[in-house]
Length: 102
Image 1: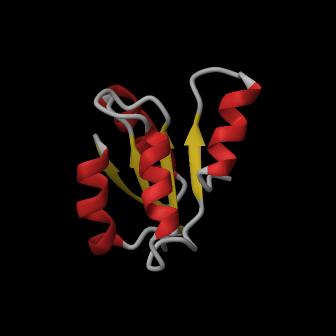
Image 2: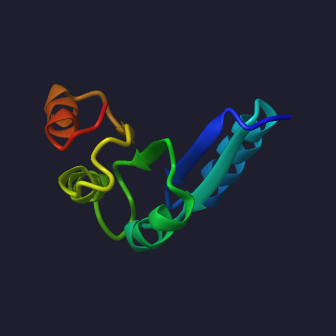
């Protein structure tokens, strides 16, 4: 099966990473995972994902700063980022959009 695209998933939960990788791999996506922002930043040059999914509540840092770093870099700012929010507060949605998430 030909790949539908390359995704980078950033989350500190191994269970979530395994689940989403299996699910998206079955439908034809090439999945790379990182457990934190540092791993994601090291990996992004190697895999050049077409989409990045970031958990907003990474254990050692918040996902919004990673989103901001990527959106401020000319090499990465065109890559769409989905920022997963742990709650439904409107302030968090606004902050995610301000950091460049879609």
